[in-house]
Length: 334
Image: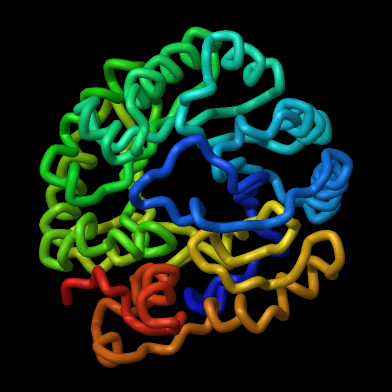
């Protein structure tokens, strides 16, 4: 990757695939709830799988919207795993009972992540605008574990939980979760509309990450993961990621329900269409991807000693708040 003096991969490692923007929840932070896109047929989805195999993309992660709303999800998953792809999914858990958990196992899912944003049932339900969603989500974790499917838990850090994230670790342990993802708050979609109520200040993000890193470093029974490049500016951060800065457009791409490709789900800029465009040409020559891989320091990033490690932080958050891919991440505390 040019940003990190590493060579660009010949294809993305992961395609984050939104089959549908439809969802039975109206979450306060959701990037996609207000999105609209035509959905492709089952045969077209299988055609995309064939293209991904030809492109040698190893991983597919189904997101959304709620993936289980698509009635052909299991058929597509079986087809993808039959062609050698590794398949995972993120779900709100509402439609995932023991029968569905067993079907996901038979369809070849390597892992399934369930979104839970608070260990307090009422707070989670309010955040997700769905009464009973906490109970259904934890039941989904238990059903997946009983079926022998590896489970992860995704929690978006926001004002409702950043002081109580320890309870999320306890909840993950109680339901035999293998990995907990503490996601940074994006500012796209409803997340942008509700940013003033839900997002943290830069100083609060700094304090959260300092504590969370300490907790991660001493936690042995549960994997804790972050996906925020701005964390690289903290003293004591010694991770060695495959790429510096945002990984979207470098290690992964997002696939919309209509076949359009974007750098990630939180950046609406269309790179091209997987069914009509030459994928290698898009990957190597897309102006959007090139600009993400060759960011130039702007604003306070100019002259900052941490820039070579964080590359301006989260590109999606910078774009959502400024309209410029290279502007500083608004979460940056430096």
